[in-house]
Length: 308
Image 1: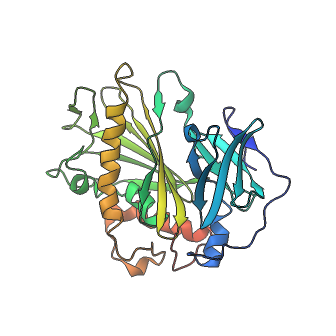
Image 2: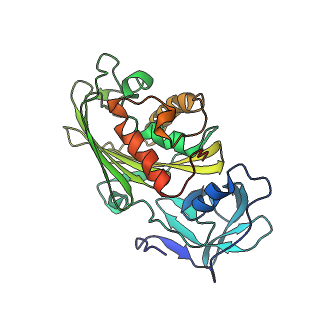
């Protein structure tokens, strides 16, 4: 099992779980088997208190409970227990019992200069791959987010590079449409550029950090947890090193507006699934991140007609 940060809590299991696929399977069984080998969030840590909470991951109903020994995750019948990690305000589990990936890394979570918060989980009728690809798509910013932080008069996407990493992908991009919300309601840096840095943690997590000229460097972690093949729960972590003396709710509300703008597009895409065959859709230069993301999903062993 991959190592976790000192603040992570992991409840081990006696042996990897080798269960059967759920009877009402919405994934192809081969894709389901691949995806069970990875960590996925199933609950916000703050939501798991004295009472158990329920969730569905990869068509599998789960029960999450906080015990004196830590968090446990079990199937709907109360057994078996799955491996658990509590990190970045989320409860993570792996259905195979043998996670092949590392959890996302955000060192700023533990830094005094940063304030962090977990917004409410957002439900989306979409595949996990489609949602994450949208989060990485630099071309959509001025068109979809022009009412929150982007400018339609500046739609050109400068050249950018994407490289593969041990966790997935790394991309840096000088964005001409970047701005962020101050507590006075003003959009800052709207006329300048912001360095945006993405890190992808396969299969369905991605982190964005913006570097603004005034030293404000907000961070967003986007994690699409696959409930069913075409239904996800979007978990997020927000971090900021500015306005920490101000109420946090406007900051949460602003980011939820952005995710709801994305939701309208993601839920209306057709085909609903994320084609790993690049010939199935037309791509442009700005789609470099999307192309490499799909290729990396294919290398995980997901099928050509990937639906998760």
